[in-house]
Structures are given as structure tokens and as C-alpha cells.
Length: 83
Image (cartoon, rainbow, N blue to C red; front, side):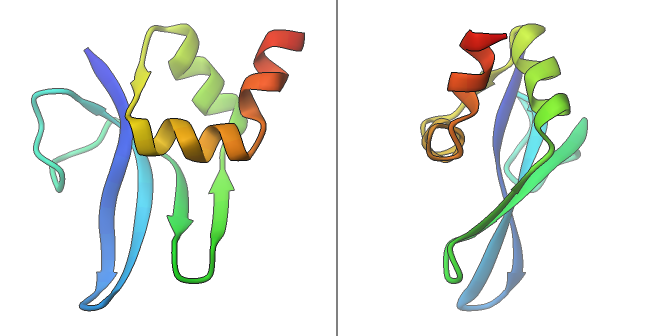
């Protein structure tokens, strides 16, 4: 099963997170299937590759709770229901 989850990057006390599609059995820093965006909690910036995220969601990927909240703030689910 594939999940959309956060992968920690950056330096100490200055974390940024990549949003990745990754196999459930992989650890947090494990090898990802595809990078689909990033999230910077300090600057509150988000970049999302929307077509790729929608592709993985259509194939059955489950976002974690945090990634789901990020996608909801970006109003991604409104786009999904209207198309």
C-alpha cells in the first residue's frame, strides 16, 4: 500500500519536509516512490505537484493525517470533487 507522507529534510532545528509517495513498510527516511511536494512549517510555505498527487490518490494512496490537513488547506479536495 502506498501512502502520501512527510519526509524530514533540512538541518537541525530548521526542518523542512518533502511530501512523498512511499510504501507503507518503509521508514520515514526510506526510499520514496516519487516526490510530490514540500512543506516548510517555519515559513509556512507549501509547494504541491497537483497532477501527481491526484494520480496517486486515484490509485488508492492514503495521505497521513498531517498531509491530509496540508492538502485540505490547499483546497485540493475541492478540485477533486468538482472534476
